[in-house]
Length: 65
Image 1 (tube, rainbow, N blue to C red):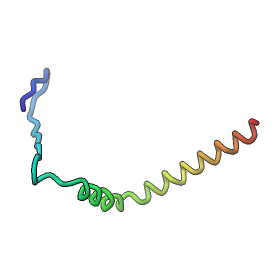
Image 2 (image 1 turned 90 degrees about the horizontal axis):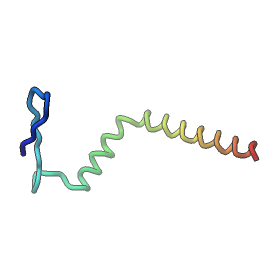
Image 3 (image 1 turned 60 degrees about the horizontal axis):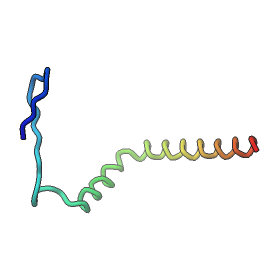
């Protein structure tokens, strides 16, 4: 694969894994879930924020009617 880009200096290596070397969907899903353990605090804070915003929305909707 070759591509020409103006004003670019350097190299970029692109690996295409077609065939037996690429991971399957099941393995990718397992790795995704395994790596999410590192972000439990982030997901928890985002979930609490989501519920707070939804509660505020319901409260405003109640008072506007």
